[in-house]
Length: 299
Image 1 (cartoon, helix red, strand yellow):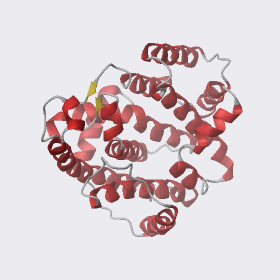
Image 2 (cartoon, rainbow, N blue to C red):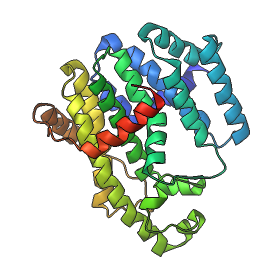
Image 3 (cartoon, rainbow, N blue to C red):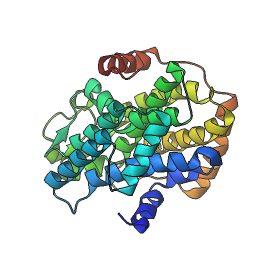
């Protein structure tokens, strides 16, 4: 992969780039290398120009290179160096790769909250875990909050991308939560069914806010040099979900995003939260997450 593609990967995530501006210079490059690796994997999973079988083969090859700690790919090489530097376990990385591989099934239809939590942990919570490794966190509770933030952000992504995912024969909104439990292929062609999905999405986003609430109880315990950038990223992502709710969860006409001035405004909102955070905890969210993490032996 050439450097210009590398730059394209970085430019694709505007929220990440905006928030990463506030990271300390000392670790900024390492965080960027972590992000580039994750984005690289994600792009393999989403590349419509590659047949799914080849994407799976690519991901399996990356797994082998991670396990052997040997590669000719400079993105993977940079990540392996991160692994060695910060003692990032293979188990966590393999969870990430397997999560992305799960997107490549012919059809994806999440059944329930339990399946969703594992998926969100795999593709996003793992990133929060690795971030904690890079900033030398040792407190188990802070790892939990970082994983919850990753899950929250992935739930926001799921909410925003429902239409695009349905076009790819995928739906991550759990079937048990959906008002319409029939064949997902019917949804895009039926205005009434779209409204049912929007109704279900509202409830989904309410719970997503609980994940953000819990994660803030970790963010505000970090040194300010880290909490600022993480807090901004958390606030901006959460605000995307809130914006979707204000639009009555109409995600069918356009992809919801924050404008630059909104990002500036919510940056100040994030700074305020760092000093006046709501210290309430949704115990049910903690219980669900801890049950999963105990099962997969990651914390």
